[in-house]
Amino acid sequence: MPESPDYEPVIGLEIHIQLQTETKMFCGCKLEFGAEPNTHTCPVCLGHPGALPMTNEQAVEYAIRVGLALGCEIAPRSIFHRKNYFYPDNPKGYQISQYDEPLCSGGRLGDVRIHRVHLEEDAAKLTHVGESGRIHGSDASLVDFNRGGTPLIEIVTEPDIHDPAEAREWLTLLRETIRQLGVSDVNMEEGSLRADGNVSIRPVGSKELGVKTELKNMNSFRFLERGIAAEIERQKAIVASGGRVEQETLHFDPASGSLTSLRSKEEAHDYRYFPEPDLLPLAPRPSTSRRSARACRSSPPSAASATRASSASAPTPPSCSPTTPRSPPSTRRRWPPSRTSIPSSSPTG
Amino acid sequence: MEDGVREVMERTIALCESLGATVAETSLPNARYGISAYYVIAPAEGSANLARYDGVRFGERVAAEGLDDMYELTRAAGFGPEVKRRIMLGTYALSSGYYDAYYGRAQRVRTLIARDFENAFADHDVLITPTSPSVAFELGSRAADPLAMYMSDYCTVPMSLAGVPAISIPGGLAAAPDGGPELPVGVQLVGPAFGETALLDAAHALESAIGFDTNAAWRGGADA
Image (cartoon, rainbow over all chains, first blue to last red; front, side, top):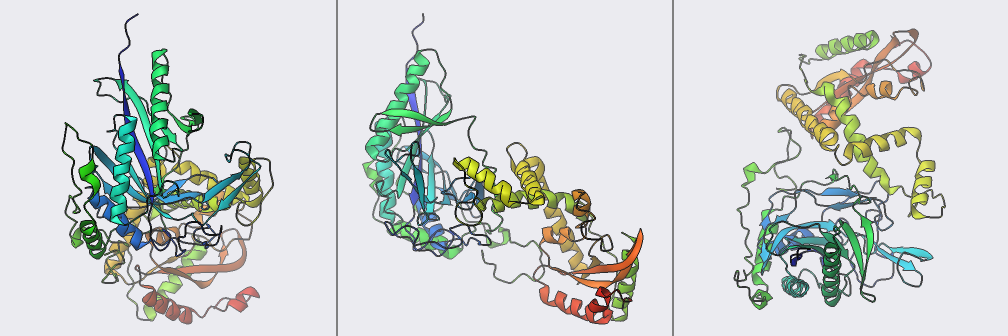
């Protein structure tokens, strides 16, 4: 039998960060970690009939600050989408997020390229009452809507990470960068920083990507490294025995080191994304973008210089200025399309 | 357009001219696709808007063993047949592989309809149309035929899609094609986006001139 080739891991990260704004992403409820359950809620974040969202400008400013620090292109116009699914922590039955027109795209931090950064709202917090604290075998589940509606940015990297230790180190670099921007306390224990890993393997030297799995529930930097390492071993074992890696979402249990399938590709949700009809497109005001750029520049020099040395490229410090010029006012689309009776200053202009 | 509707419209347009309006015909070439576009877009958005009725936080809840059963039983009990019909249509129109053909396309048609109104309002201040293609029909007489019901919206749905203000006022009474008592006919006035003030002024003037006696109509009296 021919010797099987060596396989190398290919890793990407999806990171969710809670923004430390005064109020929630789409309503005026205050954010307070550790508050008595269901004391910071309103018809909007409870998904009551007739309630409508309103975009939090501070969240947009913070998100642009992050995008600039990561060297992203800031879209002059982006839109919100509805991500539709049923779950008790999702009161409207859809999460307001961004899909194919995100706020930020491109960018780089250290050796890892950024694919995109977008804004969305957090789900409520579920607590499962039972021995393990997990949903299986629990007697009941409780929902705390205080967290529901918290502004989140989701950062998706390119699959540029090569091993579990690098994943941990890079995430540490990202955390420090975000912390110094003053937009989040990025605390994994408190849930203001959450990271999922996308893991695949391929023969060394190949340029193609293998089937990737998504790893969830790695709620510390150590567990992130261990979870990714365990998944790499699992995939290598499958391939070595002649099998194929299946696309699926896995839950890592740090105590046992085991990986359990949460859902397979066939059970994957069809989120039926469509543009959020209750919100205007996000076209940040020049004053908002300027505030973000100023805040980005005035934050302490990031730990970008602490990035691990790479023979391929020198680390790129955050640029704090957009990589493309903002569109001039005359080309920004206005709504409604009618050219009669439009007030001279539109809400987005 | 039923004959009864046409008669009321012609009388009303003549009345507008006597009040000093300059009346001309204009065309909204894509408005004919309004029903098709609307009955993709509205159920699609409705299928998402109605997802919050899940028995978790408010309203009716049908108890069940598991979460999915609770969702299904609660929503089956809580929604009537027309709502269920629209949720199913809407979910389908948004589902993977169908979005571009249905929701995506319908939204592009919507833009064309909106532009038709923009063009019309470049040359005119107010548009006047029937509110419905038919004289009022008896309650329940079209309940068994959802498509016939939807077609009643033919004259009003383009305005909803375009986001322009519109108002319906009683124009008079007329008999339906199959005979029977004379029943109301609505007249619709339409204005440009954010042009509610002028539109309401025009509607008020026309309503006063028509002098439709709602109470007399209820009692089965002669029309104004």
